[in-house]
Length: 159
Ligand code: PNS
Image (cartoon, rainbow, N blue to C red; front, side, top):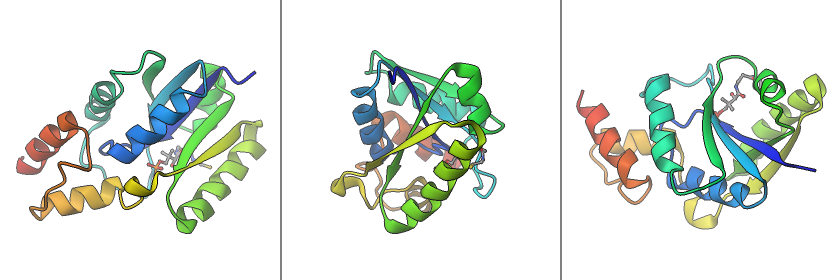
């Protein structure tokens, strides 16, 4: 019944935590679309095209994962793409509070369901924002993001 799902996010940039959730979700559905959208409250380092490229490199190893992009409501994207399930990773109670409210709103809008996957404990400290902050001040983030992301992050911060 649940053939096609979306794993949405800002992915600025994708981290190993995202990659873990994507891999676990990909094992649950015939097809998973990883879609980068816009969270109005977040300032982005990478442009839309760059985030799509980063994601393509990050998910290249999965046969049933594609990359998409949306700039309006996630529920409209889901409807247009024939997607009935949203998958989100949650790290903390704070994440859950925020994600639950969005899940309820999305279901109220169009009936689309959301499934939460608990972050693996070894990735629970990761967020794109913290990775950028640590990298910006010279910290080593090489074990927090895929190698291709690390390369691009280093370049982007040097611009
Ligand atoms: O990286 P994030 O912050 O987890 O991504 C959040 C995102 C982009 C998935 C969320 O903000 C979103 O769906 N934005 C699109 C606009 C929308 O549908 N807003 C209403 C949410 S109930």
